Image (cartoon, rainbow, N blue to C red; front, side, top):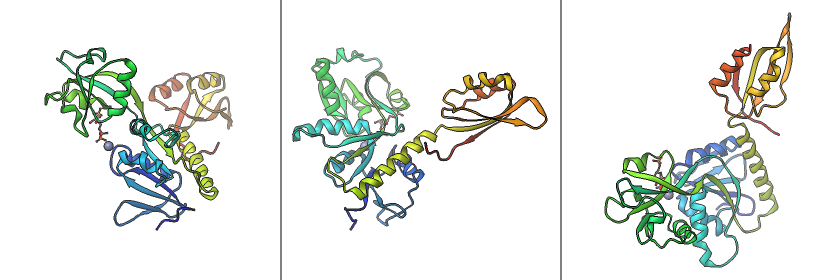
Length: 300
Ligand code: PRP
Ligand code: ZN
């Protein structure tokens, strides 16, 4: 039995596109855990936090019902659940604490390449297959289009070739699935990424303190994800250009180089992706010995 007064329970997807990222995020926040034999609960060893591994579609209800304090799930599933819960009366079923900037994908219409329907407007009187019936129906209602929403729990992309639908609305990440099924990607109705949900119920202070700490660490992890520490030798006269080439960099540290009056050592933290092109440009303005190293932790 897990102590509900003091231990935080966080639900994450058991196996799917968010699983590895979500476990990795918690580990980067310092969590060490052991996985129970049934593999469904991971017990935190150094934080009062336990992980429940569940189906992603179940996460919104687990958080709404306060079975879990927190949940990590895609916005696509959050929105589908939120619209579904509206029938149960007013009041927010959960709140979104933070967007996590991974698991990016979009909910899009897909039209058979050689079919008559190629836009949302042409969907009037036609059938659209989806696993997101609430989101799609809500969108069509707002657009004023009367179409039949046919619910599929999986393999939505084969609905048109089975003669069960005239179009689909499904998640697209790379676009490979739609292309492979000769579907043309149409209008996007939702941009999704992983988010953290929080229960609507009050949380005891001892637990809340740990949640605040976790959120702060998550922010730190997100900040350093693309961050690099860059070191180089450069002509003093190029300092201005270097700052321009490295947007998002903090005020650089400039150090003298023994026996060199014209050149200095420059150290900068750059919060954006550093591309090869940038390094080549640095070289062309006279920088040499350029080193780019990853940043592991950052506390603002
Ligand atoms: C989604 C969607 C497609 C695929 C699209 O399924 O239903 O099958 O991903 O990705 P692509 O554009 O990169 O080809 P997902 O893997 O999320 O599984 P689920 O729908 O069963 O949750
Ligand atoms: Zn799913």
